[in-house]
Image 1 (cartoon, rainbow over the protein chains, first blue to last red):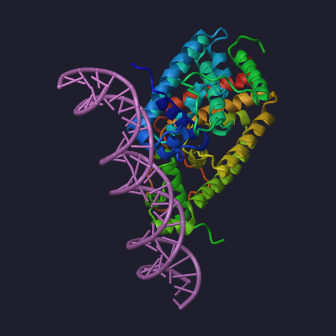
Image 2 (image 1 turned 90 degrees about the vertical axis):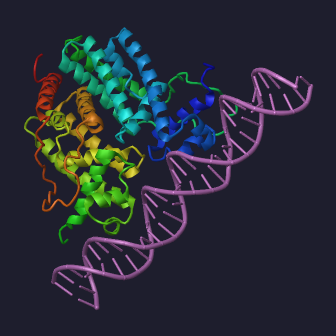
Length: 206
Length: 206
DNA sequence: TTTACTGTACCGACTGGACGGTATAGCTTG
DNA sequence: CAAGCTATACCGTCCAGTCGGTACAGTAAA
């Protein structure tokens, strides 16, 4: 297991970027290869087909989701608050991958939809463990979902850095810190939503 | 204004069906024409280009949305409840068009995204008029959004009836009845969510 | 240490098919 | 015949996937 070659990661990263910034149609093999700084042949060496490329993204999604589940289950504020708070597009690598996969989920791709369904179910289970009333748990998850989807559809384009010849940086798969910037107003909005969540969860008498 | 020719409506209807059932990539001009029961030439007679076809969909969306706004504003139960209740994919023609347009909104198409943003804003305004607390209004809308998006992404395929010549129905803006079937369980789920909405809106002391 | 061979990583020209769009001829109704 | 609409053939482009080739690292016998 000689450690994942960086080209593979770069390709996946570029694939996500194109999906997020320009949608499924624009994420052609040529475009992905160019954005990743490899040739098309190089891309197809690592992923034998377009399907294999999406499979690679799904695998990455599952791995990142697993890590998120643990954070969510262990969150001191509780799973419900954690879920809503992290549903704004903060630019974590999980966000990136999730939004990219969401674009692919549109096209009835069963592997993507299946992964999404499972992740969703786990989220709901974790929230339900935190908030006993099932209707309230569902409402809270839906609220977070709404946030997530809205951000994914209309929010900040996740395509901060464009591909091109990268020269040096082997940035691997590590989570980059959330970029600052428009975070201010959004943070306030989320704060007020979290108060609503507290009310719903019965933690605060309104 | 010699009343819209039926072929035009059939094309739009088929376009929606393909977008919903198979995603943007599958909704090619040939496929749409075939599903609508016209030739490609016929399609391009009514819509000069793919862009014109999406413009047609956006126009239809705006018209249906306008009608929905009025229903929402006049709903005896209040806009908040109305919004959440109608956010399940009930199979109305507004649902169909909205979900279809959502698929197109992925690809950074500005006309589609713009229409979506406006519709969203109006919804929020209507809910805010019904529910004074802005954070609660936002929460309720997000809840409905979550429902909508989940249904759009994973819900019942809106492709109950496949294209083909549909014979008579000039269905205009009228809502066709929701298909029965899985409606039972979903209705119960929505009922429980509506109770949560009531609590949030302060209409019921929990 | 030269030679021969193997496997991995990558490149880029090419192919066949699909797609958007054009051109044009045909049909039907008034 | 004119208008409104439909069908077919075709063109250029773009795309996924193929294929022959390059570069290089390891390794192993002569």
